[in-house]
Image (cartoon, rainbow over all chains, first blue to last red; front, side, top):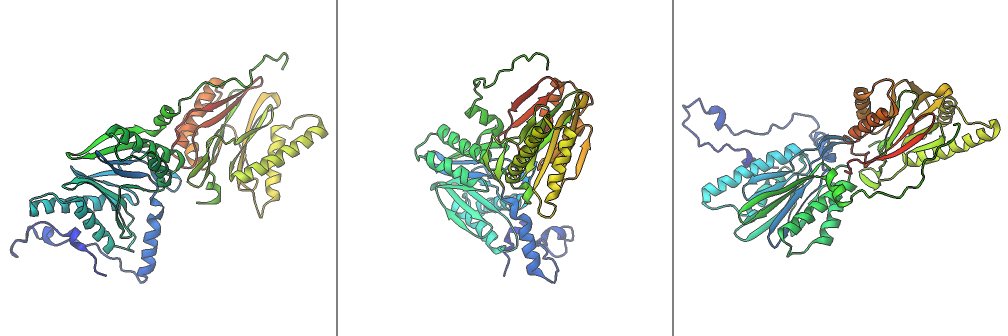
Length: 272
Length: 204
């Protein structure tokens, strides 16, 4: 299996062989494969290490005014909440966003790598890369690492010359084009709200509220999702962060506490 | 995830000045999915004795029914309520009966014994009693609860301060646990009254 190492090649042009100063930079970095007797067993363990990692809720959908992207912000290790403030929407470049689900390190590294390749494409071809092209670049890299234990479940959302674009890409090598996606352990709950409230011709505020409500509902039902519901909008001029609401407060905004009738009133008892 | 973490729970009891408080979370889940947000984990045995059962919810319900049965029999025979120390021994014996096929529960017992002295204790799933003078914890959020209680506990707190302290300790701990939370339930018991409150917490 030939690994696609184009993601790791240095962008520096090769100098003459007599220049020792840049030797460290020009040598293409490579991921060392471990020297074990049982490589398959090692791979299986590596996969099991990140398996419980997809505890999250992210969603994205295309509508009349562009693409709406939303995510929660909780990181969990088994039952323990390790952080309530993780950035799960990654800004690849000013007009493209990626969502993070699965291994945080994997998502962060490969999204940044994708950003580098998109910029190189712009410089080489004097025009922005399309969302189709960017998602294909990522999908091909992930396919070549298939079975090695990477855990990436991401959506690439952006606006290019053909209009809004949304692709789902995962570490099994899958790449799907579609109008609505939700990824993560909370995705069934988010789909419930998203699918029933979705209309193509919503305004930006309505779409943001739908996305926020879907993430809130997933954080309510799913134990591995929570924290802050961030909502981003990708329009013709690039992406813009619309809101970041704490879901603990969102619950009481949607369901305010109403004073209830008294069931049992305390009475004075003589000689307790 | 282990069988103790199947439903998710958080339980804590704390001692004050001639009073005690016992608190729990309100979530009932099936692994990561939340099924109910109003599950009762603490029940009253009699006016001065409360028991909370953490762990697998079905075992908690069955164990609760068996304990209520035994206590009612005791009341009929002895014509009085059980003392907390006696009740704790009863719980321990019932759990050890199932030593080789245990109930997957960890009970927390809290009561006022003779002279209005508060009594708290917890046992593990096979009946090892652990008496404490300050606080006892149980459930999936147990480790966080230990930390929070250790930091916030002061000896000889009045009922109002005890309520405040225990509520804050519980809510802070369940906010670090995926499997418990979604509100809180707290009972503050003094020799003259029992105060029951529902706590407003994060619903994620």
